Image 1 (tube, rainbow, N blue to C red):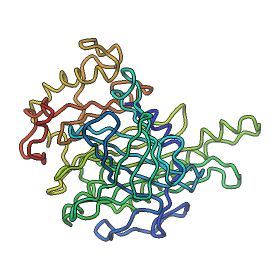
Image 2: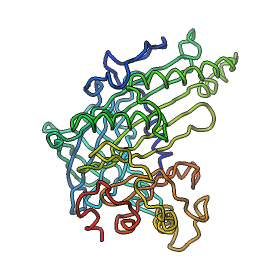
Image 3: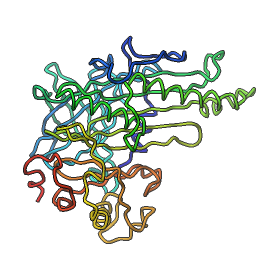
Image 4: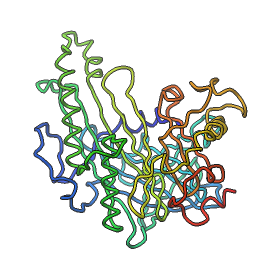
Length: 414
């Protein structure tokens, strides 16, 4: 999955979301202490931002799909319009992420890119472009790959879990006295759960905060989103001040362009839904960082949750110990067509590896398990992230008992 392209088309063009008065915006004054997570009260989405569910049929498909759509307005920096991302899946439970591209600027216009290799015209190619417009009845109508489609809004069942979209942004000038000073820009977009049982909602909220902090062990105390934003912004801006102090602005105007570009730092994080059905939720946490050089770094971390308890389901909670011996062969078989390799062809013809490693960056759906390999992990930066999905029929015997899979999950894929 060419998320290197997604990072450039979507995240490098990010500006920022409007934030409510209670959130911090475009100020470089150190923030006041923020109450802990327990003191957070339910909030609405940030202005211009929304989370929506849509269902409909894609061109040429008999079954309907569910689309989880995140919309975030970004007026603060360059007035570039909207950041839109999400994912869709059908009955097989295989989610396909979508990212916004150029053209998503009017309030009622949505342009989404499907970078999934299996949807491209050739092996390893990119999938179709979605061009949709919001209708008066709330539906989305337009084309996918040039063919007409319509998706209608779906309300979450009463008492079930939903989300609001929280956005936080700030910027810091390297040379405040200059009108066109290079800047460091920090952006955090997160999902905050609403509805559902209070204990599950609070556990999930804490889990989302830990993922955004990069707490791989799940041992750090949870933070409310404003406090998390303040903490990460302070660390990023402190590093930026130090880097900017070491760089002297050129006197030759011909060098000003490269000088500005080298100090236009970015740190951004976004959260979106990969899959949700009954007691199972899987989220994606996408991050992008640029601190000079030829390009930034980006990557997606996935997380699955048992909505009966709010518990985070890690690799060891999903797979039996013996799975580590059987997964490499299954992953190798599944990855070959994604990177344009013939069955049985050596992996090293397109990848950095001779044998597929078993990443613990995994997510669970009712249709199978997804494995995400970030740039440079098994492939070049130009190839982007590699997402491999193994259907439930292949991995069911490798899964632990008691997972929140709906009754009969994966049966249609047999």
